[in-house]
Image (cartoon, rainbow, N blue to C red; front, side):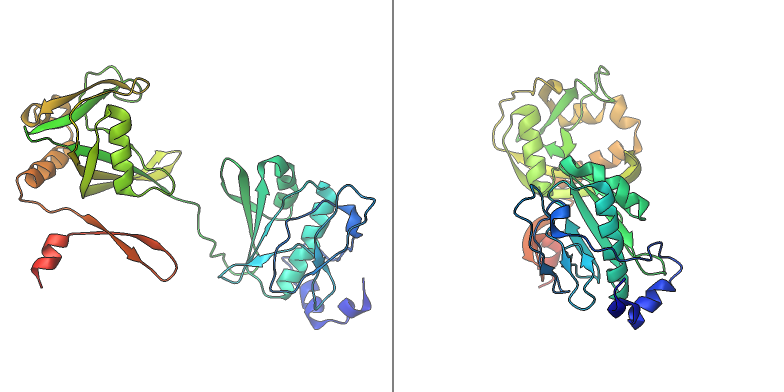
Length: 329
């Protein structure tokens, strides 16, 4: 342990913190580990030179104030840091480096610590978990772990909590509604005619997702009109909550080409015939949905139209009742 660190007031405070399990600051040669992705950091990390004789290297660095070897990080907007690992390294070496990094970040008053592990380096997750990290979320190519440094309760936001789905109300000039029977799922083999439905993809807007789902399931081209209503349920899919948007679309074509993999049959059905199905009549949600759709088709109901708007740091769509808003001006 260096004399400079031993005399540091911040280091003394660190040793007195009962939450910390690491009491030493190991320093490692630059050629002892594999490389991390080079990142900028507010702590002014100085890159360490790698040995030319080594097949792997560590692009870690020293904190400018303490001289302790730490992981390269970028700061988030909430007083935390994030590091992304890109090359293999020994789990024990990673654990020791993680300990020294956490010690330094504690002295610096950091809060949340995020580690992004690509799929091929998932073996390092165990070392992080042993240091107190927990799984936050995972995608097909990476795992995200997080750790909370302060003693008080954490303010780490939970992982995405909802799945977003759509149901498409497509009615033509003959007052026929586009309906399907599904080959798979809960309605398989029951002879039930229902609206085309589906899940909105990541990065896809609700109105775009509804047009895509109708095209995929029936082959019918449509134009989005409005969101008419939405329903929220919980513990619907892998214990996640669910938002289901009822969307009205205008048909741009009439020819049906049903999706072979998921759809048993598709047709244009008279609206009155659809509403008289026992399946529709016996379910409260569907009764409300048909009432709302009927009112919209008759001009007695106004849904929500998307408007492209900008926020301080992103672009998005605001869905609102444009008719009633404009009537006030």
